[in-house]
Length: 179
Image (tube, rainbow, N blue to C red):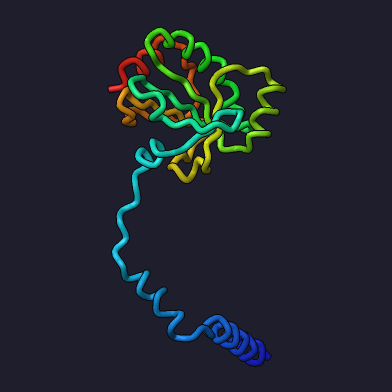
């Protein structure tokens, strides 16, 4: 009895493979060539993050390069992330404390603008919130929240994974002196 189902499975699999391989040889050749071509190394998470494009909550483009000459702190957060939400007030206090030193704070989410705006309206949070124009995973962010710091030249100098009390003396010191 087990012989018949096995034969049917093999025949079905064979038919599916033949149907999928039905393209002519000319069409298949470029795909084989593409596989054998050298692929440049993928950029590091830091490089991808510094190239990421953002937009403000009105839809206007924002880039890290817009803040040349200033340190830029970017916190990646989400409306569904409880630790992210919990640390927003301390980020705002840290932003106020470090503003005289020229540190810019951005809070970036990859969610839809409407979702971000509705959340902020509902919660009453203030700060410089931006939308990341790609998914956080695409720039190497695997933990929410994650915060990064760029120096005055736009180079990534520090990454923190997880939530922190950003206005504590310890965290303010790390932002001031990331080395």
